[in-house]
Length: 225
Image (cartoon, rainbow, N blue to C red):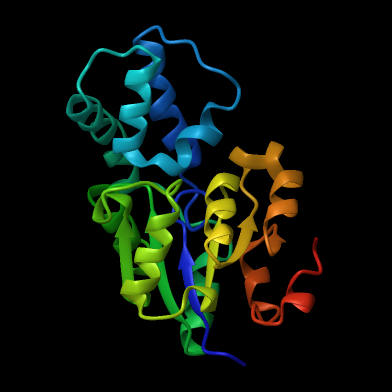
């Protein structure tokens, strides 16, 4: 059994926050009368608040990026701090990984002022070696460089890191730079399951499935595809 290194997404992977995240982001578009396509969630999820704000300005919102980020944070933070729950099996699975000697890390588009208190309230903060927001790297999860920088900070070769995310664009980008890429189901990305299975090294529907086989044994680990 390898002492594996994992890099987890947060929203939709560790916590059941995508309904809140989506509601916040779409509320801002609706308040400004901006029309958007069915793929809006797929587009904005890897971008983080800063990246989403920049994208929204290209759609026609005149407010500054700083104002938009402030609004997003204000709308979302209370939910993260007080009521957003871990997804089924996450807390127990993370503790089992830790007992096996795994190195656990987080890379998310969410800002620290929502991310950190949420993980602490759920009792899993101390399980992670690193908890990163995109703001720590001044880029987004659509940028291949963020995965290289994360691997460098972790101190492991990029091909020895298992990346787990529910967003197909993030999974695709992490795989392109050499990480072992695992897609995980979330209701918010249900329509992209087939695409995810094509691009990921493995696809799981439940978090605890990650415990069931060795990620470095790709032929076995990839049976769901």
